[in-house]
Image 1 (cartoon, rainbow, N blue to C red):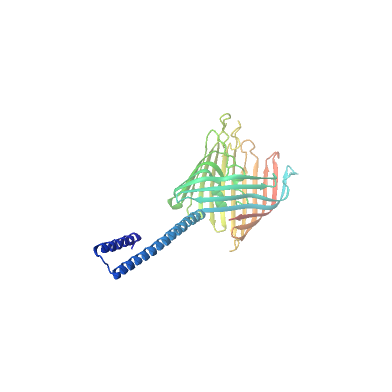
Image 2: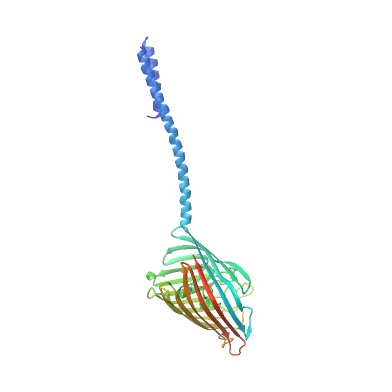
Length: 397
């Protein structure tokens, strides 16, 4: 019974008592005692219900506070579960012996270098929307300085496996694709990136996806053209694209195209030429065993603002093989390039490395490597030789 109902009952009993007193000149003492007892019982019930009502109110307030705390915990849990922090560190401890036309350069010597340190944050808003922020830190003993850049900073919309859109600084179609199949990025950049005929990320609008169950993969981008280190504006956009086909899960064939002015076409100083590049790659990967060959051809890459024209081309062959079940891997690579086919047709760049990689723990591996680089033309006006030996490492989480 609710307190209001009990109060009504008490009022009714009191009225009844008054009525009986008015109707009967001499109510019995027993009648009066019974009515008083009923009133007392009803008052006790009212007090009990009021106490229970107050207690229930306190419980409701406490429960509301708990619910609010649970909502906060759930929001924090969603934030933590939908956010991922990652990092990659490339470093080496090596000795370099470099000579230019027979004279040792200042790069010669023994030093520790942090080649790259990437710190990334990925956050997923829902099944469609996400974002990424990745910083790029570099220390080089050659220039005695540290540098920090935004390597990637983009918002992503995923419509399906066939269409993923990104806006901002993101991976470009070719270089990261080649690095993934090469598998030894912490040892050396792939050939186009190593010779500065390409880069791994830039600011722009990016699209990509997988078709035919993943057998075909495409990536296209409209870019500023300066690379991720320089987001400045130019007169027009550059374009890069890639199409790859995987006959099996272990093999791939890919072709890439680039065209533009590399961000150098300004309103007051227009570009003279358009740079373009073609890349082709075939690769095999199964476990620690990899084999691949990459070819590139670039026109006017370093001559966008000059009257003279030039071109470059080169190929790279790499391979690795696991020696045991613990992940110890023997690897080697050979690059041969002509970096100035028109202006200095005898100039060649030759690079090779040989090494052994072994994992120390999940995400941590070291490699002992020997590298040789040689840039030389027929007249010996360019004769640069570099030998490097030491330990390279990667730390990843």
